[in-house]
Image (cartoon, rainbow, N blue to C red; front, top):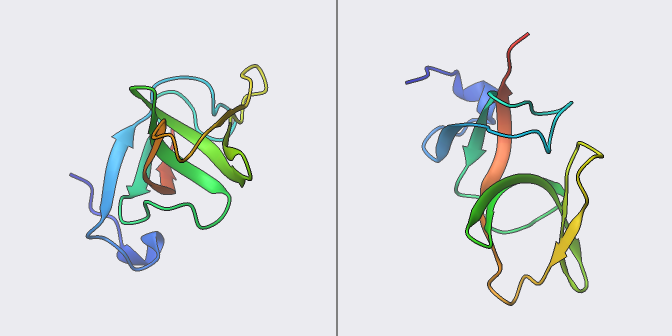
Length: 105
């Protein structure tokens, strides 16, 4: 359990989950082992941001941009390619928007 002041989470606390990140695709912004705060009430893409999503039976943390042909999934780590997936095909499900981060120094 984490006790976090709600002011740090934009006044929200009921819809926040904390998850440990595994992987290197967002390195330099979110590193392997960091813990992210995800607002699971934000399940639609309102603006470009970092989201937790499910795509092709995998859970991903990516920068997400809306494009006319689908949504573009962008990794912070340039060693990983961006991917555009069709939003209407059911390939992508937005779980929530990443709103915070605990990181090791």
